[in-house]
Image (cartoon, rainbow, N blue to C red; front, side):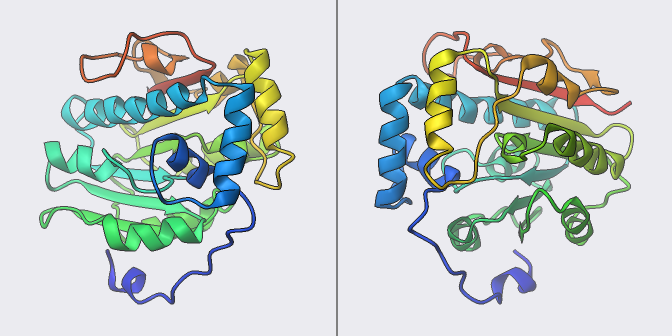
Length: 268
């Protein structure tokens, strides 16, 4: 953590409105959530019981993609936007476990996430782990502050997992991806994971969730999710259901199709 991060005032946490990061923490068996989050999570699970498996497979997808980027693609810098609450196998733990000198910058706009990040996201002595409180809708601020830790003239992996769907307008989400990827050089990577509108029960649960007062989550079509990757070189197997992206023996259960798609792509 930088001195600036360590000396910020304690964040104000709103426990009256459910938040996606805390709900996912609840689904993953964590304790960093409030009654309003558990209530929203339980309602969601009643409509779409598969959500717990979906949450777990999303975490496994993060592990596999960061492992690939560090061990195979040689990436040493990560910008993880919409990181959510710290749990097992965070981006910096995976990357620095392979290459201790890796630099990771986390970005989120939830005060509870910030409070936990300050305490828990501590990396290796050789590397750097930092946190930015900022909104995905403000990529200029994200890039300006990330540049204090990352060398944006060298390849960076930009990780956007479960976050682009929180952008209301699809066209704006495309613009944000373009701005972020436009600021990093050839050889950089984009990691995307987001919910698809291909499962009726999932759509119904999302519609109910969006009426809870939480920041809405907008399911996109597979074609729209693929649009985030335009102009980039897809890493095999391309844009697929997350459990099917290079599954390995560390995953729990047999890989199955889910209504959440993920991909890794390289900037040429």
